[in-house]
Amino acid sequence: MASSEVAEKLQLAEGVHMPVIGLGTWTVFGERGDAQQVKNAVKAAIDAGCRLIDCAWNYGNETEIGEALQEKFNEGTVKRDDIFITTKLWDTHHNPKLVKPALQDSLRKLKVDCVDLYLFHWPVSFKDGDEIVPRDEHGNVIFSYHDHLDTWKAMEECVDAGLAKTIGISNFNSKQIERVLANARIKPVNLQIEVSPYFQNSRIIDFSKSHGLTVTAYAPFGNPARPWKEADQPNALEDETLQKLADKKGKSVAQVILRWHLQRGLAVVPKSITPSRIKQNMEVFDFELNEEEMDVIAKLDRNMRVYVEPIALSHPDYPFKEPF
Image 1: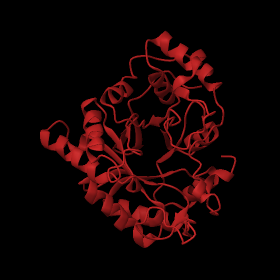
Image 2 (image 1 turned 120 degrees about the horizontal axis):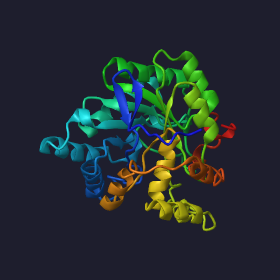
Image 3 (image 1 turned 90 degrees about the vertical axis):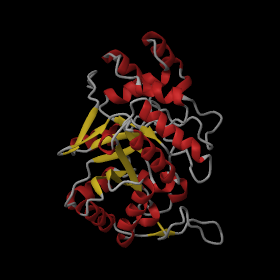
């Protein structure tokens, strides 16, 4: 049973605590959009009390995030130790020889000496290099094949080198997680996966917690603005049941959804570029959902995964063919 009590941080390792709510930066593309947009989002998040910034090499905006962080550090608003920074190893950098250089590239862009958490972003490998999605002349993605354990060993060496305080995994299935856990010298401390009211992902959450991993939810609202959304797919932010709960609590639907995640014992990284929404997303510690209300949300599950990574479906390490 989920507890209505919510800690503001989760312990990942001795002396390493991750805030339970942060800023996701996936669709805020620094290189393909307005660079000022991502800088403003990060600064607004910090001003709103957010202390977790969730990044990734392939998002293309680590440079802008780094600039925003430096501005806040220089202002004296926050110190480096106040901010928990996550970034991720991309699919084209799974070759063990590329892991450390990839992290060093992220650190250079972020303008920090180490990250608090480095995640193995996806279990599928693409052709080595810096092209985010390498394709052949027919437009097909060019795969590569690297053993997860070899890549993980290189990530462990990043911890040894002081480049990452902790390491974890993202989008792995239970069998892939078990294999890493059985062979790791430095265990993964966190699993980041898609979770929303319409895709509650309970089996992998329970599995991960039982093996000592904390869990972070991305796309907590089901990313209703996704370009590939089909017209008949429902939007959790417009769900009547959730709206009634929100009205009852005097909160927004988004705040109710975030609170539901937190009471499941998860960390959560909602994405927004709107300062008022970023601030609102942080205001989820002043109300609770009772057991009955949590059960009402549990019944909304549609098993509706929105991040299926279709370009990787034929890769042997594609994670979502397993039940969980």
